[in-house]
Image (cartoon, rainbow, N blue to C red):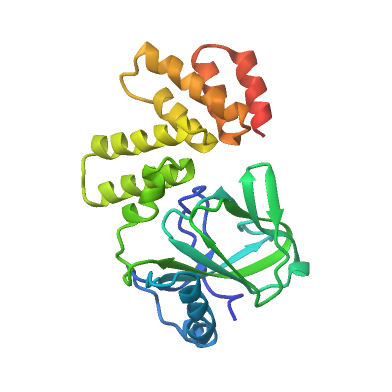
Length: 284
């Protein structure tokens, strides 16, 4: 049914590549109600209401978790441009995510994976109709090296409304020192402040404060982002220049891929071409 529809090709927030997704509903945007849309919705909506929502309510009792975004994604290898992977990431905009495979695992190579780091992944062999629920604090991604994979994704938010304030999600864990939730809180507070039209300086300052807490607690992604922020900071001081290298080196020691690239740029800034080249090779 969806093979010949026009998929959205707006840039994804994770990797700035075309999304190749088909919206079924989104709480803050219009979705074109075509005949194809009505047909697909008539198939999937009963599954959402009768199977998925009761399960969600059981997992999150009393949290009044509500479906706010629903879309179909396609990963395939074709002659024209297509998406083959979705790099390891967190679902910053979602409290909980439900993924339903619309393809059998033997239709493609690879698929959905969870990760403890970029190089440590576990793939799931999902049959058509199988579902997987995960929270936003789970590192995950998709990599399809051959064939075509279709999936249906639903993003949920708590509090009975899709306008739920994301800065309150897992805030207690962030304030208690959990580095992953500090990282998530950094990005969510930045987005919230930006939407409230706070100054860019205020939004960046708040984000950096929480990223540094996460970095100090040993989270490699935060260490890389702190290092990148300091390396590219306007009116950078000599102390900040050296501190940027320190954080990037910490992230490299934990094998964070982007940190190799960013540390390579730091070395180029200092005319260390041999060191930079080696780091760029390691980043590949």
